Image (tube, rainbow, N blue to C red; front, side, top):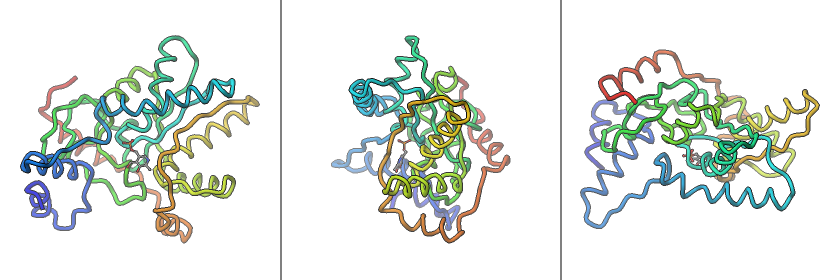
Length: 266
Ligand SMILES: Cc1ncc(COP(=O)(O)O)c(C=O)c1O
């Protein structure tokens, strides 16, 4: 219903859509209607700051338990829930605490693990300001994997910066690994995670197994983002063997580089 959306359909009638397209449509709607306002839900640094209430509260809970996490994990789409839990611990780390901070992303949308760090737009129609971030290019259209919210082409600038500075690290998991972790969780804990959350749980499982191998006791804190009761169809697809492993092909990285060609470099 917007010019941005119609332009996409004119070029790609079968477009499955992308978060970058959705943002273009939302911005267009906001600027063309007197009574519309648009409040961003992720990516921009001020949104991340707002989310840090999660990490601040987690720190209080850890204090009450008399422990400090060895590892802090979150799944990362645009970066807000991950930064929400991680930034207060990143501050501690900058002041000398030892803590490993891991953002888990899909291998089908490997922004932090394979994207270049560059100035790019936050949306397809180039309506947002330029952001310095890891990016797969503003024209990235993600494959239809079952982790909708993690398929954004960029990563919040402050998260990108802290990954570059090695205060945080990034890992990519494919959707079979993530559903495997999610099903393990559901069977042991009795409740079902959202497909996005399964990425964080896959990293938790990895870290727990590593601690076991090393014979170390570790406190692993992770952010439970949303719940999976609304996405049982994706579990059905996984359990009936319909999900495929999909890693982003190298040509897609070349396309990303083309999309940011000519933009200023950070
Ligand atoms: C359940 C869930 N977790 C996590 C995310 C990740 O988003 P972000 O990294 O932008 O916080 C999403 C996004 O839609 C989501 O739906």
